[in-house]
Length: 327
Length: 94
Image (cartoon, rainbow over all chains, first blue to last red; front, side, top):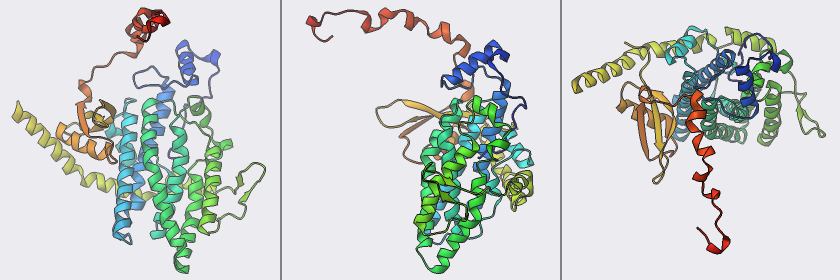
């Protein structure tokens, strides 16, 4: 999802008899549904996986501002502009909640940001796709935030206290995001034929990248088992994807648009929709840095960071001067 | 210059009559900016009527490893709890 490439320690999940006394007690707390808090003892692998997952999640929120920020000045009405501005501001806030949660594990904010800017840290593949027109603002809010909600609602049950609390806050704000997107889609699909065609085109382009957000199929998701055992992850990639498909296809039908997958069909017995595999080769290429916008996104973040340096330094210099004057 | 601004813990009073409650943390160059940033980060939707910011470095916490000795007494001194005492029904509510 927002952390699609969390490499684990490489080892499989330990059997209870292979664990140290401390590890066994730790696993017992997790199994009992107890939350782990920053100063508690935790295995190094737990800490490492969490830092990777939470920081990738935070970076996704931060980079996720770019595809939508692009359209703030070009929103069709003042109301749409104000709404989009509020949404993008929320994404910045979500990034901050997550960075704060990661920092409770002993990493510094500056190092986290350096890793993003240098390209060492990952963020979600979805934000490396372009937003070409206003209909994309509808599709992004509806599909991308919709997919994020599926993932984040589950993550409220994650075992690490600060991460779980960040998820609770984020989920409260996220449904505004999905609904504003759907509202744009409703408007466009009930508009002129040209507007409806734009809505369909946005859906066609963003449907597959949205499915990819949940990460590779479970059979190929080699690092998931340990994260599931530690309840860092609480839902498998395929479970999340299925849930998203099941809730979204009826919404597509409501809009009067076509599902961009001819294999999508409701199985009346299971109550689930079938769907085709997205192009996983494309997914891995985007993750490796070869998506349509990877270079642009990182360049935009680096420019913002460099051009904001004088302001950050100025505020700190002012604070130090005030403190000296007070002493 | 340090790479990161100092870290602040943020407390919000959700409504009058309630205590301030810890909601998270953020970086800011000084207390005044911490309050302004906390307003933007943590109270975009009527979350509070008052904010406290405290430098994280100024918080002293109890050690999790001492959870046992630190918090046990209230559990084994059961007479601290009102249910320890049997009061006859005839006495009425007490």
